[in-house]
Image 1: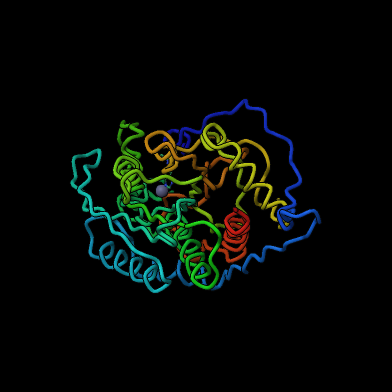
Image 2: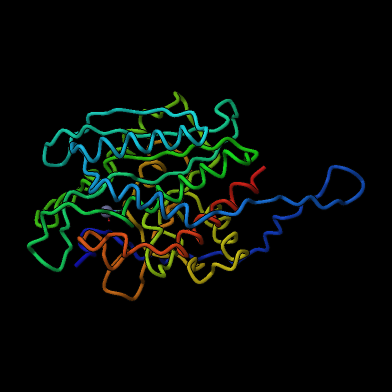
Length: 331
Ligand code: AHN
Ligand code: ZN
């Protein structure tokens, strides 16, 4: 039943073979070959877990609620405390049902003058309705979105904390997008892709810095559940195949190939789709995919059970360390 709203596209694409990354060493610019070790800091999953919990403790972060406003303040303050230059984009966005959403995209930038950049994305709002809950009584209750929302943001806050301690070679933008999850309620007949990812659509049209560009982007969505499998998502493969390859190779090198399955999966109408198509920044999505199961993403997706019981530090670790491996090896 989730398939109805998910647009999982079957991909009959060839996937490339795996290449040895050898990213710990590089050739020095001399006659001699010299090995330079890039020290990638250790991602702290307990720290990330606490950042997920802090968000969930506010309650559901549904646009136009006080919980949403206070959590937004918390996120901007956290990024600032980690030494990022913080920009808030306030936007009035119109939802599919005409509701005016007081939205806020929150961007934390490191080395803002550096032209070489990587953008890391997650959505920080939570869904207003648990419309896939097995109990119909819950279908109009808001979700806590521990995995769907807070997990990706928690991983990015921990990466921000790490960046403050050790800068990668490139400038990094941590981009927390709002109003991702206000897509039409499952009880409607509305199947409008543009109803989702409103904050991403806004940012892609009006980036926080005019003419903004990045070498690539990585979106994290639902990266804290129990033993998820991350396949190379269809639109990511279409628009940013080389970035998928880079990330899945990094995961393999770290021994996380149990989470990161090096095969193409289905497509997700997620923030990265609009970032690719409107902003033209090649961006991948790290999002669970279950090719055999009866759910598309996570078993508690859009149910009231998407709470802290659904968050696993080992998963946050695998994703966080993999993203760090990629950004710290970029020259
Ligand atoms: C849809 O399937 C419409 N959106 C997937 C993106 C999403 C929803 N991520 C979290 N909630
Ligand atoms: Zn969602």
